[in-house]
Image (cartoon, rainbow, N blue to C red; front, side, top):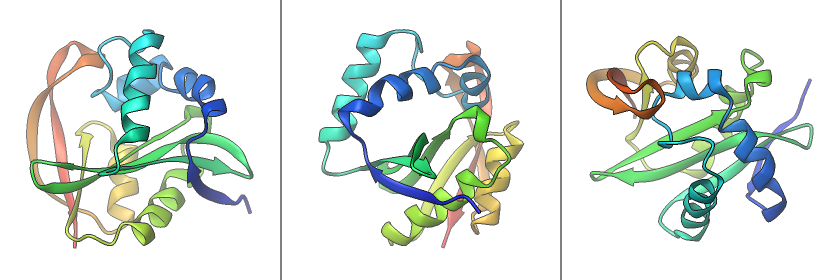
Length: 157
């Protein structure tokens, strides 16, 4: 069985993360993404901010030592939220669920929230398997789709 682990983001990870976060199908499914996923300068600035902010958690997901995504937590409007991005080649292999379980061991604040585009059934399924429950929906502008879309809001604990 593959080993999934979390670790700090390293400078050498940035090229791979940039490529993962500009994959067109992944961007479409995530929906709420950077305005221009191909803008490397904006990506570098955003990642630098994430890495330097002591108020949030931003980690790399590895599978058998290979970088396969990111996961983290942050505060938004007083609520702690989780977020993750898994390379499309790993979808459906349990990586997101295992990474989320590892993150939830580290982040003990409850309740904890998550959001996913309402049509992103895979991500919602990962969250529900981890114990998150849908508590509502919201509508927001999704850069990746150039439109307002519905997102599902979930809560654990």
